[in-house]
Amino acid sequence: MLVGNQNETINGILVCHDALESVIEEALSKKCNLVVCFHPILFSGLKKITGKNYVERAIVKAIKNDIAIYAVHTALDNHQKGVNKIFCDALGLTHTKILIPKENYIKKLITYTIPENATSLRNAFFEAGAGKIGNYENCSFNSQGIGTYMGNENSNPEIGERFEFVENTEIKIEVTFEKHLESKIVKALFKNHVYEEVAYEIYSLTNKHQNIGLGMIGEFTAPMNETEFLSYVKEKMQCGGIRHSNFTKKEIKKVAVLGGSGSFAIKAAIQAGADAFLTSDLKYHQFYEAENQLLLADIGHFESERYTKNYIVDYLKEKITNFAVILSEENTNPVQYF
Image (cartoon, rainbow, N blue to C red; front, top):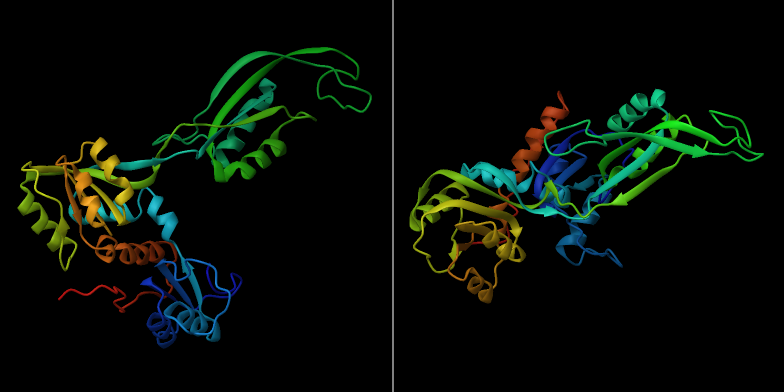
């Protein structure tokens, strides 16, 4: 949420690519008090709002007219079904997977409990979002062992008495989870564990998250030559023009994509064995990085994300039925072709 009050009642939603002043005016005319945009209009902090530039003018108009602005950029960039899956689908690529899987995003929880508590505790973890690995849910590892403890004068042990040394059969439960779920997982742990004092450990894993990350790579059913490929991309993505590296004289079958500015992913595309890499905002010297190993093509920033707002509209209509979700008619692409 960039502008607005999250407790306000929504009358209508206008979905756009960039929340410019003209889009705010369109929202007013269509009686929408929430603008959902892909690109955030605010990229950095503002020390004053005087309407001196396009960002400030849009913010002023939104605030004056009680219009909220919500941006989905970063989340949709990294989502398995987000920007780059939309990109791949537009081109007809199949067998898609994340190009640069997200690192430092998975954590692991280990805890110990009595056998009678294991099933309910494990299910509580699953309900909180733990135990998801790729296409599988409710994943855990469980092992049996002997736990020991002795409570002091302030203890109230579930099994045994104060000052009694207890040896008891316990189940060790291990589950992984995405790091943003940690507080929810820990809450489920303490709510559903039977012990007075809960022993647990949380680790950060170095595993890459295969379903979250930047870019995507997929394949065509049948290969095509480089000229055919670029013509096909230009038509499908409605490009005003395509800047590209030297032809490699290879057929194009395996294609990597990254919507928006993606020069940082050139090496990843090469390492993944892509025949071509489609992205935008490439600088002159970055075309050399193709090293004749793949066809590097800059199709335009807006063009590489062209169908994102359509996806957002379809998603919201599916989730919020019988409600006004409108696709903006404003063309906010600032780049024109002569």
